[in-house]
Amino acid sequence: MGLMTKERYLSGLREFDHSVFINGEAVQNVPDHPISAPPAMAMAETYYLAQQEKTKSLFTTKSNLTGETINRFTHIQQNINDLIKKILMLREMGKKTACCFQRCAGLDCLNTVYAITYDMDQASGTRYHGRFIDFLRYIQTNDLVTAACMTDPKGDRSLSPSKQADKDQYVHIVEEKEAGIVVRGAKLHITGSVNSHELVVVPTRALKEEDRDYAVAFAIPADTKGVTFIYGRQPSDRRRLEDGGPDVGNFFYGGCEAMVVFDDVFVPKERIFMNREYSFAGQLVELFASHHRASYGGCKVGVGDVLIGATAAIAEAHGTDKSSHVKDKISEMIHLNETLHAGALASAGKGSRTASGAYEVDRLMANVCKLNVTRFPFEISRLAQDIAGGLLATMPSLKDQENPKIGPYVRKYLVGKSGVESEKRIRLLRLIENITLGTGAVSYLTESIHGAGSPQAQKIMISRLSDLESAKTSAFHLCGVK
Image (cartoon, rainbow, N blue to C red; front, side):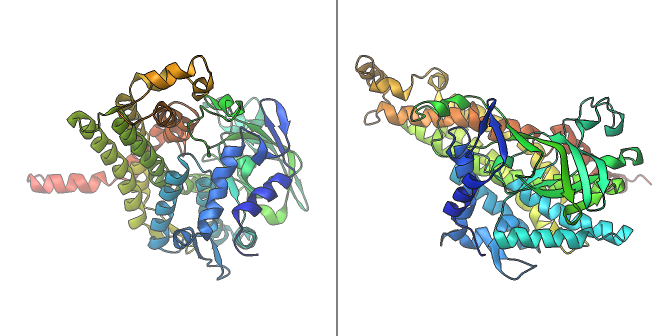
C-alpha cells in the first residue's frame, strides 16, 4: 500500500467504528470533536513529515521484513544508527507539535515484543515470533498506528494480580477456546489509543506462577467488540469547546490518554504473543521500559525547545532579553534541555544487538536519561514562568480584546515594549501557560514523572545496572587495600 498520507489517516479515523466516550458522551468522529481533534492532528503529523523532502530521510527507512520504505514509527531497529535516528525523530516531532504526539510507546512496544517473542520461542519452543512478524508486516504494509497498552489499574498495590479481591484489576485470560482466548480487564493512561488502528497489550509487571493467567500479550484492532475507550480529562481542556478556542495556547495540537476497557474480548490465536509464559513478563516490562525511557530524551526535549523559544520571545516582548539574569536563566534552560537529549543519545550510541537481531538501547543510560526527565522539565518550566511573569496566570482572554467596551483597555494595558501589541504578548504567554500549566503540562510535566515508570523505578534500575563492585575494586587498589 505504501506510505499513508496525513489526509488518508484522518479520513480513515473518521470512518473507524470504535467506542469512544468524552465527558460521558459517545463520540462518533474523533478528529472532529474539539477536545480530541488536536491529538489526532498531532498524530497525523507523523504521516505528514514522512513525506516531506526535508524530513523523510529521518521519518522513513527500509523494512528489515519487506525491504520496502516504511514509516520509522513502525520500524524494528537494526543498528545503532536506527536508535539514534529514532531519538532525533522524536525531538523533531516534539518541536513540531509541542505536545505528546502519542506514537513513541507503540514503536517501543513493537521493538520489545519482537525481541521477547524470539526469546520465548528459543526457550520454550513456542511460535510467537513468527506470529508477531506476520502482524508487523501487516502494520508496516498498511502504515498503521499501534498503541501500547501496558499499565493496569492495579487495585491494591500491595497484592499480586491473582490476590486482588477484584481479579479484573489486571488484564487476564478468562477463557481459552480452540481459536483463541477471551480477556477481561482494563488499561489506564493509554497514550493515543483513541487515535490508533491497533492495540498491542502487554503485562505491566513481573509475574509468578500463581499469576500465570495475567501473563498475556496480544494485538487487536481498536474497534474490536468489547473494547471501550474512556477519554482522560486534562487541565483547561474545556477551553477547546470555546468558540475559536482563543485561550488554548497551542492552537493546533495536543496529547491524549484514555482508559481502555476489555470486556470479555476475544483474541484470535494468530494475534496472541504470550499465553501464560509468566517468567518472561518481567523481561518484557524491563526491555520496554528501557526503550521508552530513552524516548523521553527525544520527545520532551522537542517540547522543551518550543518552551525555551517562547520564553526567549516573551523576554524580548517585555524588553528584558538583554538583562544578564534573564540571559543566564535561558542559558540554564538550554543546558538542562540538551542534557536530557545527551542522555538519550548516549543510550542509543551504547546500544547493542539482542538475540532476535533487533537493537536495544543501553539500559543504564536510558534510566539515567529518564530520571533526569523526571526533574529537568520542572526546572525549565519554573524558569519559564519566572521570566514570563505573574501575568501568565492572571491574563484576560483574547476574547476580551473584541469587546467594544473593554477591548481598548486590554490592548492599552497589555502591550509589551514599543512595537509589541497586546495580542502577540497574550498569545506567547498562553503558549507558555499551556505547556507548564494547561493541557500541554500533562505531556510535558506529569508524563515526565510517571510515563515509562516513576522516578523510583528508574532509581531501582540504576542501582541494579551500575557496576559498583568494579568501582570499589578500583578504589581499593588505588588506596592500597587488598
